[in-house]
Length: 361
Image (cartoon, rainbow, N blue to C red; front, side):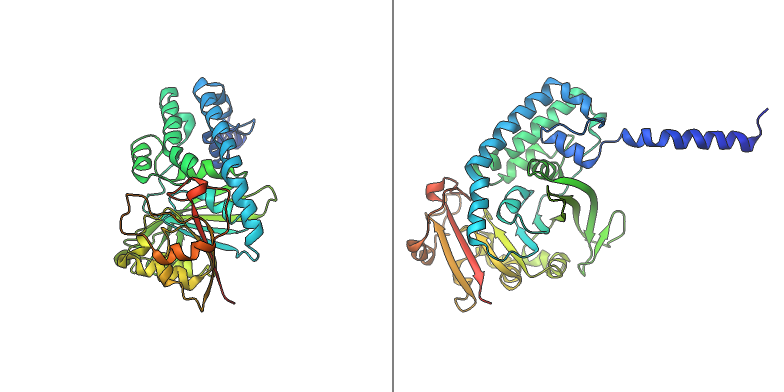
């Protein structure tokens, strides 16, 4: 007859023996990202059997075609442009009003090691996909496709559509899209952790208490094919003056400055007097700013501080943004160099504008 101590020892041995198997039943963040991106997860992943479903196979074909076209039409040309004109990249890049657009952050600044993205949309969650019913999983994959349709076609998110597609489904917020973009950009996700900023800009990871009115976000550790460790931060934050001046977002960002910045399809918010804090921060803490005309108005670039290099063609803002035409912008674009890719609201290559601003040393 076994004694209690012997029974306990046997039970512990069984638990330890089964623990690796139980751990393996939970898909890693990297496998989840690959699955959502229509790419096969690792062979031993619990998600691997789900790739035999017709819904996932259709999803994979859709993304294979969409990203192949995007690579040929946009991303490869943006990287070539950056190699030609960005001589001294900084390790940090800021991308305000970005939504989950890691795709263009990486295309313009592939050599950055820390990416800071920010917008109103919450990070959301990615559940254990193996626990979803097959119809629910098929619907979730389709919603991911719908939410990304505009950026795959036009280079920007239609915010209202993204909110609708990823608000009430099994996948919510920006995190599923960040997963897809990381996987399709050839990255390997190593860790995903919730992060919150207190009023002083101090980051609190996981379940640490960041206090009242903390700025919520996510930190993703990843690596590219060269295995260099990189970090992506995404924060859900209101960048208007009344909110950003009392949050810790700009204080946290300042600890990572100076940086290179990207502003595109930003709803001309930085033209407004309600976003002066964000505008001043970018001008003060950026060494390079790449933007379309929806970014910082030309009048705020001090010619003694910045050298300006226009590319493409400046047309009037689309009808949704009346009153944002800049005659001085039009003037400097009379000497613009051509670009062979589209960007911003004027997404066709022959009517897109891009301004490269480099701070004088």
